[in-house]
Length: 167
Length: 311
Image 1 (tube, rainbow over the protein chains, first blue to last red):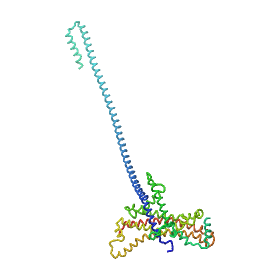
Image 2: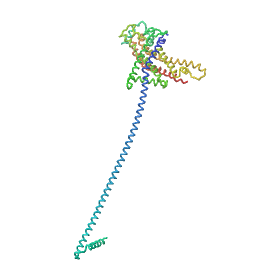
Image 3: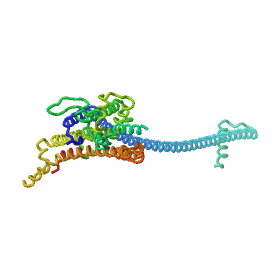
Image 4: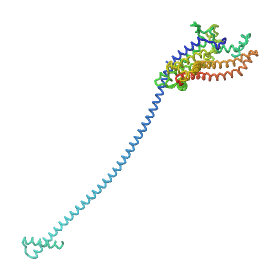
């Protein structure tokens, strides 16, 4: 027991226990527990951040798909509108053309009828003139004036004779 | 040339008595004697509570550990957005290593936050106490005193020169630390299963009564052998490395004595002693780490065994 390496030293033993327990208490209170708590909080925070990022990514993908759909729908609609407008325009043009054509036809028919009427009237007038002239010439030749009734009946008869062969 | 001077001085002053390597080595490894304490305190119940070199070292290590760790943690927690910077990164790595690799696999998720502070304190405290023994603080102070300070014979600096620096090389210190583990095992078992059940858990139940006559003494012995092994492993490892380094460095003085010339000693020192001592010091860095790790790991294992008593 002379060797100081194996000398029991109860004072040192108790000092070590006291020192260590004091150090343990202080460190646990002021360093280890707050630090362990902080580490756990940070772990939770990182997990939450990752989850949030994942969610945000999914949300973004959903929004992107949605917007792509909207754009697609809008494009289809625009195409429909353009097609419809083109068809409408075509139809309208066709209608206008049709209408113009029928208008023109009506005008032409009108004009033709007018012309026929005018022609008919002119012929009648010419015929009347011719009758009058014939009567005048005939009375002159005959030398006497026919009574008015004779005139009228003669004219009528002459006119019928002229018109009849034509029908 | 400092070494040469020292050697010549040694030759001049101790010419009569030969260099006693064993005495010098023991002096540099063991505690300073209780007959010359640094601070004499009264006996309580026949126990001498005087502050010796190793008590002083325990206090220095404790204060250093507490100040550095607490300051770092407080500074980290004070920030608005707690970002670990600088030394906090290293501390965090140590804390997470001890929690995730030492404590949790042994005591389980339920008790991890209860026992991590104890194991962390054991690890950091033993690591720093081991590590400070590798730094020749007091040897440097001694040289400074010898050539610069020239303090009086009875000064504090002269007193502090006696004894080894590594408190964990003293088995009284490691026995106290093992006692802490011993107590922690009982507390852990009692908190997990109740005080009575903890003692019943020491032996498997449902065996023939005759077996218990053999088993109970064995398990009770095992209960004390574990802290005893912790005590001896740490103290012996810490002592051994230092003795090896000191023995190799003693060659310088032994050869000086044998050949009667300082040049012989210095030659051996440059050629053999210093390179070997550097190599062993490098090995010691590993030992310092491993022993702190082993002590913390075994403490966690024993605590876990008390909590998960599968018999």
